[in-house]
Amino acid sequence: MTVIEIVILIFSGLLVGFINTLAGGGSIISLSILMFLGLPANVANGTNRIALLIQNIAAVGNFKRQNVLDTKKGIKLAIPATIGSIGGAFVAVDLNKHIIEIAIGIVMIVMVFVLLYKPQQWLKGKEELRDKKVTMGQMILYFFIGIYAGFLHMGVGYALLAALVLGSGYDLVKANAVKVFIILIWTPIDLVIFIMHGQVNFAYGFTLAIGNFIGALIASRMAVKRGASFVRWIIIAVIVVTALEMLGVIHIRALLSS
Image (cartoon, rainbow, N blue to C red):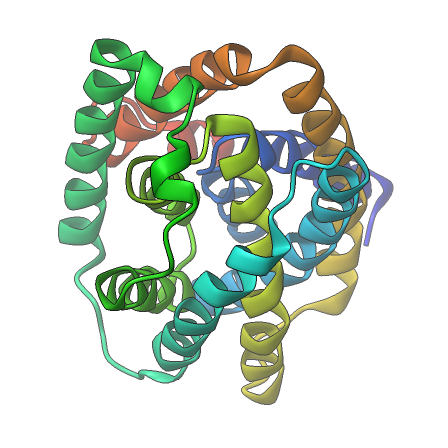
């Protein structure tokens, strides 16, 4: 690798780690950068998992030290999600990426309106939901979220946040903590699958991971210090930009590769 490649990977990783820890969708940047540097799409997808793994180790450790991580319920929710992610990573079918991106963009726009219209649902959480046992419906939901994560991962943080806040009653700070914990559990398994299929560039992956690690540390500290309102506005900003990209209104990936 050249010095320029190292700088690009670390800087973009820092940004991705920050965005992914507070919201999600940062993989748009990392996947674009990896492909811009010459990796095929499937190798970029596998290589990105190294950075995601390191990023979430940093974020989970920080959230744990700040006593905002519910590991007990997180493990229960992570089990079906992890099973789904394994299936998603193994399924060898050609997906229509354009249709998926349009669907994600529409869902993200809906989430923006939910965030703006009823912010109390995202800021305060609901104890009556948090205290309930994990239902079969939730397990099925997290299973399908996991399937998507195994396929592509990009934007899966939004789905997890929505499920954790609206379905499990967490406020945004605690939801972010559980989110990164769940992703941390499934990521190493998916990474092994990509390694087995020769779709991981270790040099690029670990260099990118340096930035992701730093970005995750910064974001997880800011989330707890600034509170749920701060996280909410970060999520709104990231969702709007990501949704516009998915719907073809703006072209971040084209800009990055120009």
